Amino acid sequence: MTNDDLAGMVDTSDEWIRQRVGIRARHVAGPEESVADLAGHAAAKALAGSGLDPADIDLVLIATCTQTERAPNVASRVAVRLGVPAAALMDVGVSCSGFTHALAVADHTIRAGAATNALVVGADKMTSVTDWTDRTTCVLTGDGAGAAVLSAAPEAGIGPVVWGSAPELGAAVRIEGAPARFSQDGQTVYRWATTRLPEIAQRACERGGVRPEDLAAVVLHQANLRIIEPIAKKLGAVNAIVARDVVESGNTSAASVPLALSKLLEQGVVQRGAPMLLFGFGGNLSYAGMVVRCP
Image (cartoon, rainbow, N blue to C red):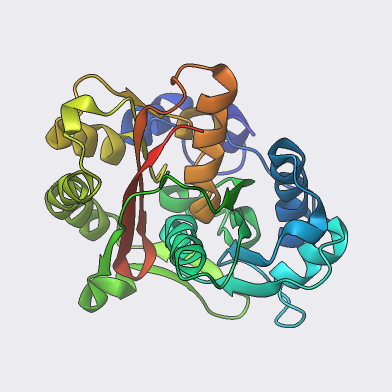
């Protein structure tokens, strides 16, 4: 769905959207496509790329905030699709930072010896909760999914997580009501993200043993360019490729970090083993970030 498509639905324009959020297009799932469908496609691709069999996966974590079914959970539905026979199955509901939260949980679980191979997916169908009459939010949202497989290894490929929240500001991002609709206090989110998060991202680099200027890539939650670019600049990652998938995909919530990361990897623009910062933030207002080595 392009900005011109949106201009035919609500009082907006391509110029207005690009100036304010930097988005050019977004993808919209069909009415019959579920979050489990989106997650299943991404998970199958990640599993195939890992070289593992479905029976090798002993933990499945799905980060999402837009599932409509409560039970079986999305992780269970994805496990059935992939033929994963007996894994621990959990959904992680931390909105836009759900994937990096789930990545940290999988990392901790493997380090503790409770799992060997984990499938971690971020998937959201944000257009299912979009108010198409609200031009401040409908210009942002898109649908998508991204996934990764984590395995135990002699050398750690994932650094310590820095995570937390500002729950007193949590109501600034909402998906509530019947039917559920996404809304937010945009200025509150913008001020919090651009003033608080750069220092927290720097802390994630410190815990990962990497200076910001040595990062090869920075993959932030793809909220909008007016948030991504100031955070990256204040972080000081002057030599890093900064993911800007939001331009083509919109804000896909928990899917945004793995979706943007997968595109960088497929483009081959980051060398294997190079340090990258993954940093999710958003609803609650929560955040989770860590340095990972490019697989």
